[in-house]
Amino acid sequence: MVPIGSGAKRKLPDVRLSRYACYLVVQNGDPTKPVIANGQTYFALQTRRQELADDQAFKQLKEDEKRLLLREEMKEHNKQLVDAAADAGVTSNMDFAIFQNHGYRGLYGGLDAKDIHQRKGLKKSHKILDFMGSTELAANLFRATQTEEKLRRDQVQGKTQANQTHHQVGAKVRQTIDELGGTMPENLPTPETSVKQLEKQKNKISKAVDDQE
Image (cartoon, rainbow, N blue to C red; front, top):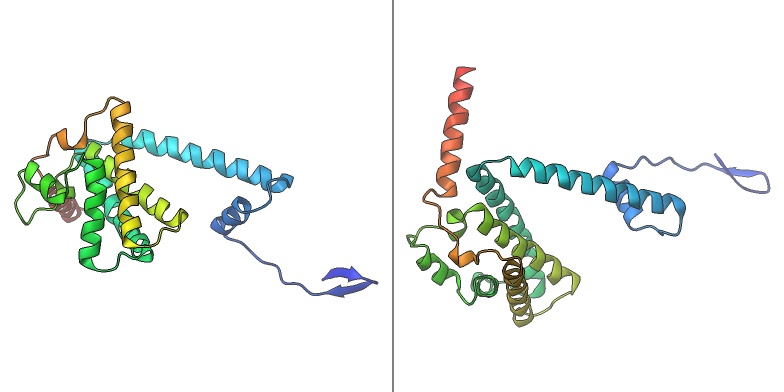
């Protein structure tokens, strides 16, 4: 019961918020209010701490483990990219193939999916992303996540604009790699073992361990 004036009271329900709900309330609140400012600072610090912990843990992984992790991340973010592109007007499979090629051309200096496939010497049934090292996968993951965010943030509409956005983001990632003195993605070595083979090996080992327990 809470007082509402003139001595009267009104019954109001209590609401229990999840941690994620608290995060959303704080991040979208008025930062001039001390409780909101303190909350935003808290979540910013916690997020950075987690990023540092994740980064340290990632560095300790072996190359094959990094590839497995990044390939899985790529699958998830490609789904989100598909949704964002669909909202922008990229609807058919052909539309999305063209959309993807614009991103590849930006990141790979003009090379599209077919060119990259041939450059890596892959079979027709092979998927490009399954034959990328961790560095190349990371570059493509950044391309995908940033394109999705830009499509939504800028409320991009129309296939032409979506394609241009994907190309621009890919080119920007390439520019960043160049400025940092990194190796261009098309010049990175192609792993002999595909991610699918690594997954099979991992599952086989896990099954062997389970059988022994």
